[in-house]
Image 1 (tube, helix red, strand yellow):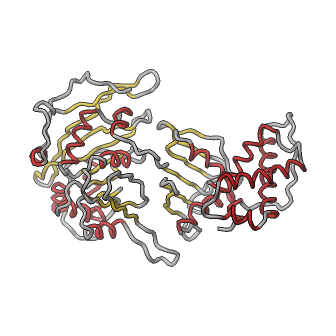
Image 2 (cartoon, helix red, strand yellow):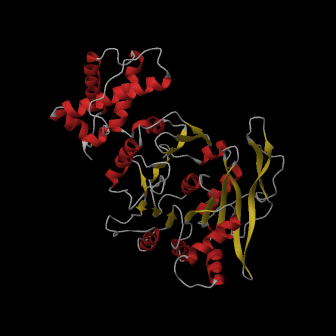
Image 3 (spheres, helix red, strand yellow):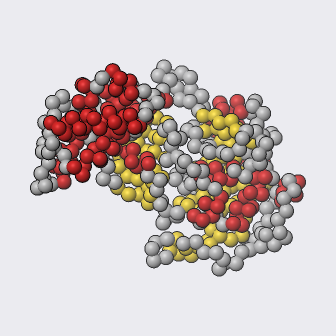
Length: 462
């Protein structure tokens, strides 16, 4: 990527700087600020020395060196236009230009904000964030579509991905692992749209999920036992319900010394074990060749001598390969799927297996599912924005043409408090899973009364 692209292309070569006046309204002041910032950009492009260009274009940029270069040009411009920008705005100007050169422009501060979990760019002038499970409209804006497309190119160029009218959508990830989806006109009618699922720099632990009210201590103890006993688990839920976070957490229960192969579209899992092989799918190149799908990777993983396979999400025909892996010696494998209930998750799996292209009888598919999947964790985003495991459901066996299930744990919601927070409690249903013999073989013991129905007035979460 050229340095001119990195700085942002200028629509006008000779921009006239307006002098700030306290009587200017907010919109006019903002316009003057943007014009002055564009002048700095243009000056850097036109006057920088070869040494400065090398420093600014280096793949391993020194933040202090880049800041010093920017500050030098800001000072030059202020010497010529001393009243062009208020003194209080100068540090902000320096930060904004540094973000344009080193980061992702206007949204860089949002990426650095640890309280934000998702960033949604709906065209250049509407940027939303998710904070504490709630959506908020920010006052952050891009100059125009061209400015936003510069940032899109900055995201994709290091990854070797492309986006244009012939290929107007792409999945990618940032350097820190955050997942990115980009879609541009003509498919997007609001201009380029970017959705960033931020990557947590510090992996969440089961203690975090308990403190958030996603599960309680008893559920955590049960899930730890399930993972150690090599129970095959499917984490099910809607978009943004926290499936990947829960998958990350329960995968931390896998004992050291096992070989784990993870397979994802965009790498998000943060396993802490030593013996982990991470695989990531690849889209087709500009010639339409070279695509490596999740299904290809699942098939290849079977030749890699894995103890466990973790698929970030099954969406299509790879579901059949995953089920076959679970049925042929790779017990304790994990995956996620989009579904609104445990029963829906089974139906979704059935549909995905049909997408594999094999003409299998429905009964044969259901038998594969019932023998492969032992447990479904149903995750939901409650109306107040919180995420909870609403059901832990055992997949039992076939009765006729129907897969039978039973709920082991569930979340019982009792209402909302005065702040709109959901109130409820987790409880055992009183039913024991049929795979307790696997616990015994793994040397795991639970108290006799562990699965007794919990007190309905048990621990409340608000």
